Length: 362
Image 1 (spheres, rainbow, N blue to C red):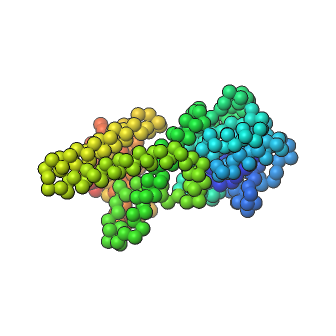
Image 2 (cartoon, one colour):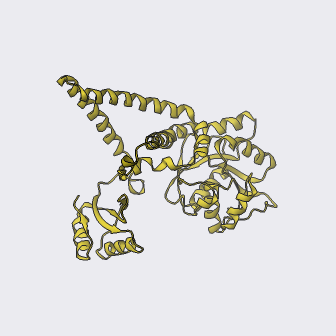
Image 3 (spheres, rainbow, N blue to C red):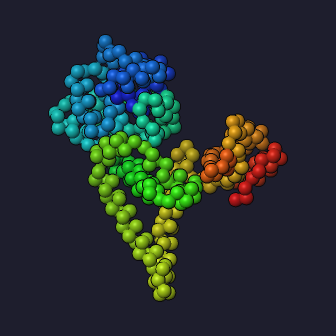
């Protein structure tokens, strides 16, 4: 691949352009908002000057509702050897294109499973896709050259290719992305009018649950409008669980011993099923989840403190597998949770104490 045209210079389009430009590909940028394309170009993502000749790959990075029209226009103009989109849903745009009667042998649907709470070119980064799955949905009509260019794009962005059927992809992202986003928003909505004294008690648990609720509503309306059926089916199942859990909790309030026992069993069941589902979430590098030991270290909100603690862990010869920061509300301090292999935890704890760090007992 020597040249590419990126249509749509939001987070995903600009991030892909940054990755390609960094690896020597000539990238042309286009957007319905010329100012946004100029911003992406100023960030080093390419040039907002239109290509003079046909490019190798056209990447359509527009909202799902506009994918078919944008792709159809690009296909009719013949701007590239191959075309793909990066929308978060795949079945709908493909069917829209088929209804237009276009030759789709040069087209392949794709979806990089990566993003941020922020949108727009200023949120873009060239390493956004590194190590992340990038779904490709070729059909029997997809030309081999097109699939090869798509695989090259994924490799240049240092992502991991995953080949799926388009409709299977849409059901999967409804489960692992779209439905959780709505549930996160529903939990966060409980905080909107909560008393300030309650909000001040927020800890890491509710921060984890509500983090993705900070995303741009306009972007998510576009996404959910393109995949409403599978998401609605999943939310209906969640609603059933909620009804059962509410009944179980009401049972725990009862003066009747049998009802209290049934209530406890109902709550235990949903918690047990939650445990069983959570352990299926892939761990580091997409492998089976690993049970790490947590070494929690008190850290002040000062420049260089994180660097110092990581340096001390490295000096102890311990690899930190994962890390979380637990902020203390209203305080200039918090706990850094260092996740390490269980056998390494005692060694790390001893080394950090020796270097003057205060540790919390887990």
